Amino acid sequence: MNHRPFLLALCLLGGSTGAWADARSHQAEAERFLQLAQADKLTVPVYAQVQQMFAQRFEEAKAPESKKATLERYQAKANTALDKAVGWNQIKPDMVKLYTTNFSEAELQQLITFYQSPLGKKVMQQLPALNAQSAQIAQARLEKAVPEVNGLMEQMSKELGVPAQKQP
Image (tube, rainbow, N blue to C red; front, side, top):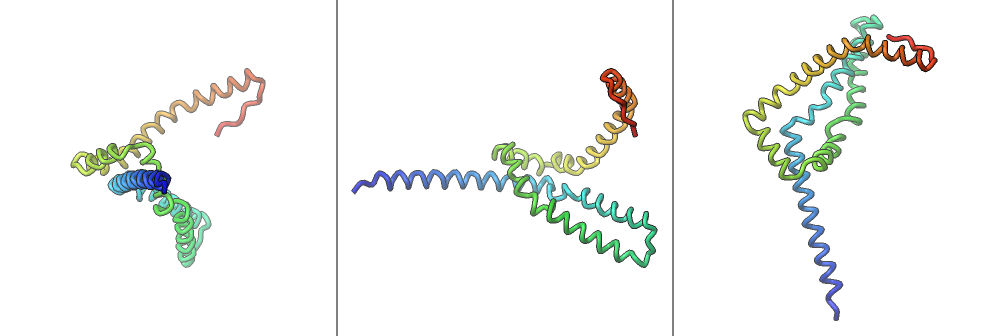
């Protein structure tokens, strides 16, 4: 009896099992990193913004306080819709794939070590405020450029013989 096909299949199976175990370990490290990075809170601002939009609409409608339950009911429905689209359970597999694609398992382990350190914890604590302040700086600088960019757009439109669009 020829055992070669059986041995070859067994070797291939053993090799793929090892690869699967490596992939699972890599995924586990990505999940550990995402947990440390508090990635499950990434969409919190989206939820807050949607809640604010509903509250603003409620205010614009000059709805009486007696209708506040209506606002709350719709805010809850909006949260449910957001949970289906961007809730952590929905986006976690994509986030794990993103990090396993861009970082090796060893790199993820190094990131985990860093984010568990005092400096890493400080970075995680300060990062949201730093990102917000950075966005404000960029926005302020951008606002200075808007008139010039709009003027350039108008000049190009004239040169092309196209009527300029009204700028907001």
